[in-house]
Image (cartoon, rainbow, N blue to C red):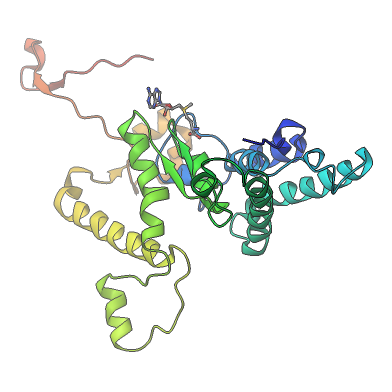
Length: 284
Ligand SMILES: C[S@@+](CC[C@H](N)C(=O)[O-])C[C@H]1O[C@@H](n2cnc3c(N)ncnc32)[C@H](O)[C@@H]1O
């Protein structure tokens, strides 16, 4: 195989990638981190940048087009500008920019295919109309396969941990199957029958609408069946003595954010023989 040096082997605009990666940590809305907790999650910005830079040739690999170091550096800087835009969170769904990035990847791939036309398995391995697929066998939270898919590669993910597999299924495998489809939940079906819909469902928007609808349905059902086990708690003056921040809520009711369930036994202390004592220890 005739190999061409990739951009990642020469240089990356690290400052821009670092800034975007750090910023991503505080983004909640629309970020995969809100789908499910994953401990070793990699920033999407970094994943996007490294996949792009692995797929795109470094200009020094094309001395016929960029014969001098100066020309190579100028071209490298052009690719850097694309990466600097690509890593910004706001551009995650910027189709114009993503299409530009995909086109760069295709361009490098076409060069690779042309150079390897004489390879004995060229038809199968170097098809200029089919990008190589991407597989992350240790996909974890799925940052890399998600970004590979975004950059136009056919993406596969696997992992030893079933939680990681579930995250990747939800993020990479299922949404493309419903791409462009309208929701199927009864609320939208009614609207569709009434002819009130008339909108275009881009990407996974229809699926997201269904996830919201059925997620709410499950929440409501859970509340109906077990909600009584999680009552709101009245804030008393005694509570506010230990927690002055609760003072303004005294007499009111607040939602408890965490419950600890414990078995209880009758108190072995004869002075409290009718009192139920929780079998739980508290460590500070
Ligand atoms: C550092 S994490 C990957 C993080 C991931 N790149 C991300 O962005 O979230 C490494 C992953 O490898 C998985 N793993 C470890 N040993 C494995 C094995 N033998 N086969 C498959 N997956 C394995 C772990 O379950 C873990 O999810």
